[in-house]
Length: 246
Length: 278
Image (tube, rainbow over all chains, first blue to last red):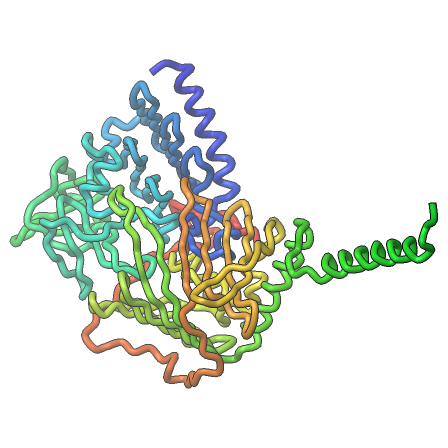
């Protein structure tokens, strides 16, 4: 990646982002109401889309895509992808940034940002913010976001799918049903009046039969855990239980 | 040459008559010709419709709508029919069928939704009025309704903003009914509306295109039946959730309760900038 190309891309990103931030609201990007449409938009312009939060941003334009957070940044242009992390030897444990042909995504311990064909969405501790990004299934999301390289923990928190992964198993925690697959938990939610499956934080107490890929052994307060992305698991007789080390 | 003294008077009279006739035709024409006149005619028709809708304490409306959505990288056309019962200022009941299946009730404080095929239900805090609840459904609950603009207490204000341009287009027939065709544009949304030229000024057809995304999204709504003064008791707006249905959350667009400024752990994604009210 050459510096001029990166700078050009970033200029486009910044230019698009500024306009988009001004226009950004919540989910009005695809609304069918005149009043709601006039009042704001999650994404804007023909040049791309963006989602911005106080802790990070992701933008996609015709010239490339970029995601920036407190812990690092990634820029994609025609010449490749460049990622920068700030002093973390294992950045995947704290999140990751991926960009692909059709979407860009950033996921971290405090939330996630996804920019896709239909709009932008960001999810934090207090819920979902953004436009409509509903993928047919998790494979479609991974394809769109170029997840071949993978983000530990799998699909970004907050992502909406039309259906859960085919191989998902049902896990019940305190009377709430979750669908589990490859380190990700999904729960039913209503979006635009339709039932979708939303990726959520691993619910403490959930027991899964096997650990997902990419886990490391850690010791917290004298207790052994397996850390998989931002989720900690503790070995129990029936498998591995999601835990919250103190 | 002898000039018949009356011929000049005749010619003058004919010329005057022609002038008067042309003035009458121009003055009485039903078709505005200038942009200003078209805008004025359009605004008048929308206002008449708006006042008529706002005057109804209760009404029901049945609509059919078609829109295209992208799913898995493919465009999918979604057809739904909707039945809505409105009781101003704070009750709404809806049933959606077709490619979606949903029942819903706004009872003055809560919005309850039931999906019978999935045997699930959801509930969210609503607002004190239909207007505010419709805003909340669109802005925070990602649940826009294509015909919602016509349910507000002032459909005129819902449809036309300060940056709107356009007006009356002409007369067109919709479903065998001669209608005034109106078309308005706005940086964020374009819409076309057809309202009968005679009888009650209730919408027959509405086509709205949202331009705020990377490509325009168009929804076409046909208003199949309006019923004014329909019976709408409290029972109409009381949620009917079958036993055994699982409660699920609604994907919300903003926190119901903002975090306190002094909270030690700030949210990852702050609330979006304030909506520019028009």
